[in-house]
Length: 502
Image (tube, rainbow, N blue to C red):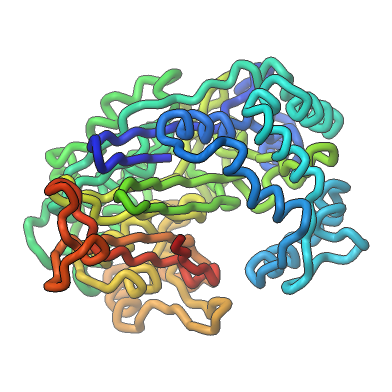
């Protein structure tokens, strides 16, 4: 989570990332790599509740228990299954029907809930009530945590109460990057999003041309920059366990970006080994993101995840909590495959270590005024998606909705394929990269593959120009310090999302 205070200009990063349990080890998945992604053994120590409490202590205005009431009501009184959730329930049917806890919530009568039906998670509501009344201690050193640990261990996990009691949130200053005329505030490692975005934007900025990112050629340059970034970022890891200072410094350096830019040719692409030949990739997809701006123009950008959809595929029956499978974001020495990058030692498992992530919650400033808030969900697709939304609006001048809705491209480095969006989303809109762009990329040697799906982005923009009608809502300066421009919020139509104002 990244928080920016408009009154103090202070920006803080709250790292509430999961950690490896004390009983975890580098070789714990040697005999069963699948256990890194599925089942209770894939669970990391949860940190989000502690992180939210830290942020509330620093910036909160409402009483702690008040914050939980809407979620408690939804859990206990039920909520309508939205079409997007309904489609995912159908897609993950085998996982849901196999686990007693998930089945109880999402298939209470033995059949999967469908869009329009009511879903209840009464035990989660009770757990939230306890946390609302007692604070996070109810989870980290109380009855909720004890019930969760009992369920986890019954399901084959290794978490202990000691893991919960020892969890600590890492609160630091946000990473600040000046590029393309804007200041980007984001998370430090082991989140790789801010550094990855910085490197890609600095590479494009090093062309010293206002139209370097425009059109088919700009798209080719973006893809090449992404491929270099994907290779370089895998030297990142938890800075409490590995020395990443050189890699982090390089990824923030315009001079380093210029050197990479000189390796990019406008007329061709290259095989993976050209881009520094090593490391692994992440596959986190059970992720959500929200962007918030309040009346005072304080801003929050937060990415939250259980890693895969439905996490480890296990729901704790006594607490209603879905177990994460965040251990899947670590690299292990034995996970070797021809269709993905090799293991990354900087991201090997150690007790209390945080795994590398692709999360990219960012806040954008212009002349120290809030210009926008961006973030996304979708695993390793997050960084390219957030980069493209940023470029579309702030550099190419697209309106906020068009900037989010515009077709995107993605790359994993291995396999050496450009994935381009070609799908019809829930509201009926068809999103597809243009034939002109596809032809241009193919002429330069890119292998293309259409895909149904992509990262989900959330976006808030504030206009910094003051229109003729003055007033707080229309751009007039407040206290001669903070611009209160018009806010435009976009929730990605790929997920049938809708923005909300209070």
